[in-house]
Length: 298
Image (cartoon, rainbow, N blue to C red):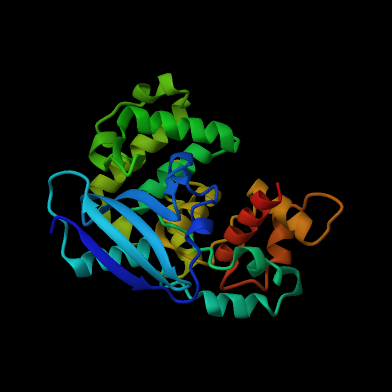
């Protein structure tokens, strides 16, 4: 196929503008919005594609998908499955909203964020790469690292006058030596982790298909070099779409919880885990909503 137009229904409301805003999206992706439409580059079954999404109703989206290069598109069923995953269309937001109605501190979240869904990365590896770039730095510096990484090894396409960026392939990064990333202000450890993850995933692709309870997936990811609890929890959230990971040590979450419970000082990670002990099985999605609420308030 040269292009595909597919209409898909989400499980509950979807607000594409909200989905485009969270800091879990790269700055270059947040800029890919025009005239009520969200744009992305991505890979579907290994084929680089350009996507344009526009809401038709509160729960129906029209996707226009075209190949980024000369490679034909996969079949329509494969495209639809990939889009449902990437845009979290099967995420049961009605059940989530019903759940948070039973928690007084959380009841205001859907008012301004109704229809917010995570846009997942094309692979778990991409999510872990981006998480490593976010480790122990502020958002502005992490954005600079990601942009330098894209400029050096990514691919930029144009659609409707917008720049759409595709992260490099695992093969591209696995072939590098760590010193290649140093001129972009990647530390020695950060460079080694990113390249090491690419080589590990290339040699053992089963990592992309991790399954099981969220806590078990996080423990398995922590076996990877350079992946600690926060990186594993964040990577599983935006790479696998898990909804019960709980990055309790995240500064943004700590500050959001401080505001949420009107605490006199920032809580410790252990205190956050205690305060959120009744949020399962939605701890990850609640975290995502709190991050976004915190960004909106600032």
